[in-house]
Length: 363
Image (cartoon, rainbow, N blue to C red; front, side):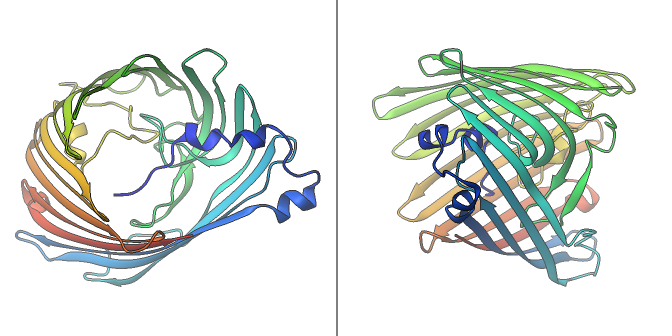
């Protein structure tokens, strides 16, 4: 239920930013915008054959973005998390109590946006906060090209322990490069080829095609994605996703299949993060020789949002089934309440029931 801010959306400033909104540094600071978030989170797991686990935590996020000055902007942001209680005393393994996750300078031009510094990135196989240099151009019709280099990555969410900036996946000493292209010149269709490279680690490349068409009251769509890695030190990996979906009367339903390489799983493809795992847990979908079938539904009614997904995974180490049920309610424009129930059915610690509750106030 976390809301992700896409890199491309973050780079596309308002048209007024293409010119100087402010005429000097003092005005750019005075006309800047403050944003923030108070986040209260709690989870408890009833694990078969083991002690219960759980924790409650609070989080505060604060950011500031200057006004545009000749196309330039400065953006800073930090998050502090604190555990209020733990059932067993070790569930909330946090080293960093606060992380300066955003600190960058950005430049916007009619056909080019550039961001240098700590920033949030949301690509298919790169997420969370990165120390990076990223450029986005829309010079070609119907095409968005993103290229970048990231040195280190941090995790700064309100619902988990903070993790300060560290090497990519703890394996890429020299960082990672990315080139991502999105083309939407064909009605209802988005084509997205991409390539990532981490020196002395791997080259992983793939493509994603997403179709979403309107047919009166019905919407029908699908996704096909395949990515493989050429590894330097471990077995090569791969990942396949195929999904069909439809929408009627505001209710979305989907059915899909995921598969990894029989020898290498996904290799190091996830080293810089991923936006593919839509389960609350679900790490088994990336295991060696994993085959996952999933089905789900989500929608909205009045101020409520609801969702449910069930997945069954067979992998080299065993079997896993997961059911996620979620509900969220917008109490006000800035205050959201949500809850989730998770049932994991596997072996050992993977046989559990989990309850999650959270409240978010944003400004």
